[in-house]
Image 1 (tube, rainbow, N blue to C red):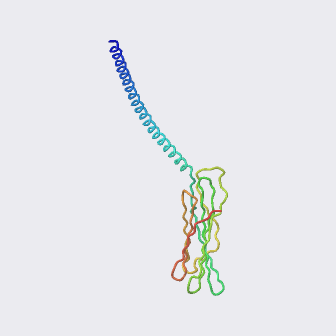
Image 2: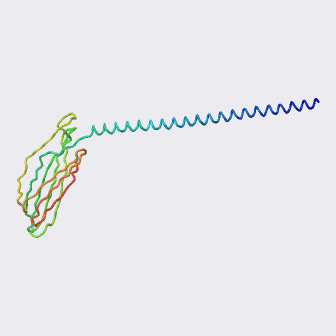
Image 3: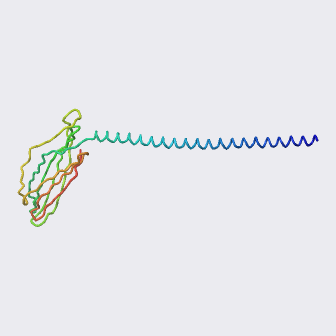
Length: 207
């Protein structure tokens, strides 16, 4: 009798242990699910924060770009461009005609400016064009005003003797510049007197 009671107690103890263990296991699952849910919320929060940071950086870069554009220099080409030509004789009955044109490039913000010149030399005999050479560049001049601003500009200068009647009707010059950067190109076209025109364009180098 005593043995049966002892066995019954041991069985109840085992059952109690089993129930306690099952409760602990359930608590473990609840804690695990909660932790997973909490990590998921944390991960979503980090994603939202990254999106907010990207948007903020994009807005800041946009303002920086607008500010740099607003502070950019503006370059203007002078309205007065001239072309002058001369002709000379060389040995062997060769004729050389040289045309020159000038223009001024002005920085409307700083009032600094450049004098630019392009030249074209054409050598020919009575039958054909033998040689064509082009040269040019821009020379920097001191600024006119001491402080930055928004300036306008024009220039003119005296010209050497002009003999446009050589080799036909003469020639013409074209100047073009970029408003937003320091870039200018000069072109000269003259008649060869042999039924064709000779044209050369040159990108200015700044000194």
